[in-house]
Image (cartoon, rainbow, N blue to C red; front, side, top):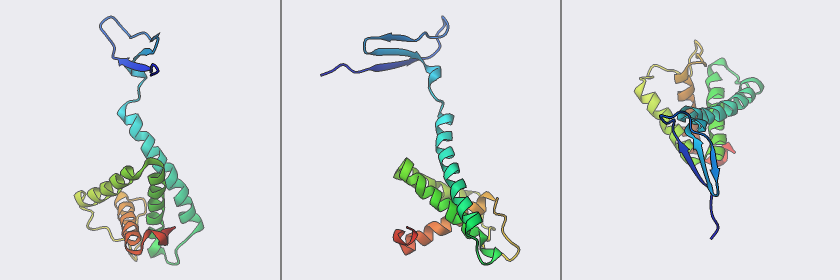
Length: 150
């Protein structure tokens, strides 16, 4: 059986910063080279934001609804497609967490007054509108089947 590489990350000690030490099969490194949990979360959010930007460009600019009351549908489809793209990249667990988080945010923030199909128009920048539009499209996909959205 071959020897493997062991990496040890040490925090800053009383004598000062930890030097980088490399030995046969062992590397001792300072822990400040590791990413913080915030940086890792930003990577997930960045992937979703880029996917949403591309989907919103297509469904917000190239595909337009007939009536202005239906503009929320573009937002919902763009968020849903971005989430499906991230599901392929980040995995099924990320996708399930994303949908559950959307539902939790809708129920805890008390977004009961959000009306998607409004004659006055909808504030498409509103986070509650974005969440509700996505969840409506998600429910339609579950009801109609995933084959309809391919």
